[in-house]
Length: 196
Image (cartoon, rainbow, N blue to C red; front, side, top):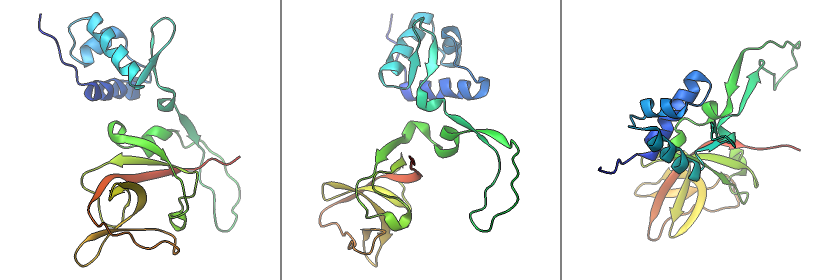
């Protein structure tokens, strides 16, 4: 019997689409249906592969669970003024999933910890976590993860009269012009900071 090739990214997306719609993970039989698999054994193999990549988890009985970072949701109660105080009012607007709100393309997104203060004026501080999305089409002015002459950094992508360069959000750092190569790896989509 020929070996069936399963695209893990596509399968992961299909499983989490089911999770978003039904608010639960699919059974092995349902995975067979949504991923077009021929047997529960193949579904079980798929689950084990996704589990190995950290895309999902299982409990002691083998029941499929979303990874912990996929389960986060929090109540959106309203707005808070950052200017002049207004009378307090609390009402449940909706239940919001932090993953869905922050991450648009889960399969191409990941998180990095920031080291250094070169982006402090953009609100990105030493120790912050940034959620980035892989891209091959960055835009001028975006904050990007870039490889410049063999080193990785987080900066604004700029373009001068004849070439691209990187610019910090801190006046004590000079613009960075590549001597050999500048490659954009990802763009910053969100910043996460925890307070004690």
